[in-house]
Image (cartoon, rainbow, N blue to C red; front, side, top):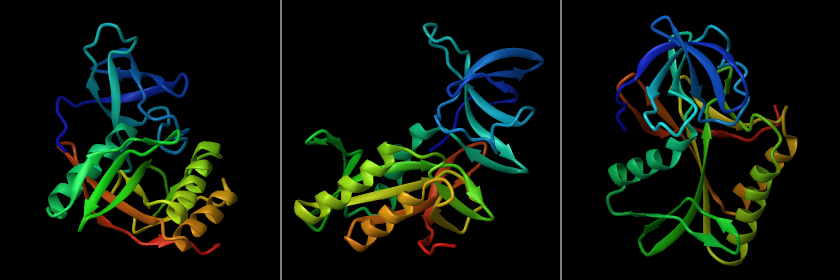
Length: 226
């Protein structure tokens, strides 16, 4: 997936979860932050960032933050890209599989469906941006929504159809993935249960440059308690 019109800027401060003040070419603008997580280690005042213009005049922001430069490593914080990235990856690497947009089953929304050899797996995706000592971590905060998603995947896997959860890690400087036990110990328990129940769990990392972002492949999922 290629980027277009990215401009370099500097984060001055984050007003709230979805908006921050940035400096571009010596001028100050409001910028949209397409990520509701805290990102405390990434969106630091003075950090170099890359943005794209938002020409829609109905918006209250002139730009949206796409990439953060973390000590020379580019990290994509735009959570909206996780599904398009997975679609691109499946079509490129599994040409015999069919990728379809998801739908709702009893008030539970699936992001996509992947059919291969007449077997359909209903998928949800989660965008991952944070890491700790070379390992991607999720979640960044306790979320009943995330916990409920895993519980529903486990239940539906056992009763009705195949389910899956894909963590799309939008950075390249990691070698594995683990649940963030220090933030949400229940999430780790549910993740282990999901794996044991047959839910298809995958962690996919990305290569990120100023020109494009694409998934490069799977990384191991670490489920020990350390």
